[in-house]
Length: 286
Image 1 (cartoon, rainbow, N blue to C red):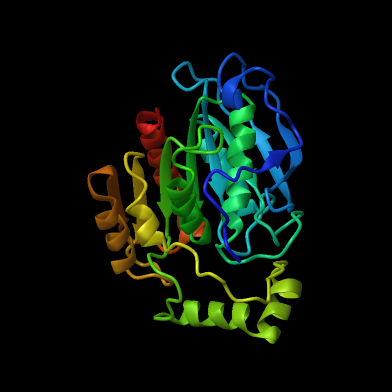
Image 2 (cartoon, helix red, strand yellow):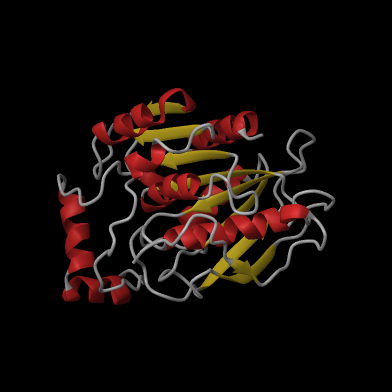
């Protein structure tokens, strides 16, 4: 399960405006919601949803592309809540990673999911959005880091700012009980059955080969793209050394918010935090 070369951009079922580089200029973003399926560069069919968001004079060309956590999908209530909060600041694209929701394929738990995000970003660019922010939670938080590192020079599938919430810094971490349970779910046949029928998540049975770029390595390669790392001080999955490693690797282009009393990922992200993230994105994406 490798993520392929940077710049290996996915195709969309909706084509960018002909004659417009990257579909980001000369086209007005749509004002109506759209649901479609995208095709990744390795041929997986991905469910995606576009919502125009609030009509703000300072953000007419801004779009948030939201990468959910493991076992989430574009239709889950907690993902919809995130989308509704960001829609006050700009347009929003949500999608279901492979193996989740109505998308095809099987989850590789953060490896080839970078191709799913690239497909969603390319679609958003093609709809006419010149400014784009990727926001990922937990597994999605690791994917937005790797995507920014791998697609930094790609005007059609790259991002202008990155927000990583509750993400790991390194792979194979088993230092907490929730992560040990997650490893059982992913690595054991019985666990994958629980994932499929209990959590509606289809998990690939193969090990990573090669092991993908780690989140902390990716964070060191994102500059000059602005990066915001958000983490709760009560996160039960990843302790605070993970976000600190990510922020340190990012250097001057990284910013760390440690949120008092916050747990893990989407479910723990309150409305006030989401709107602060939205304001940060509006100011940083350029």
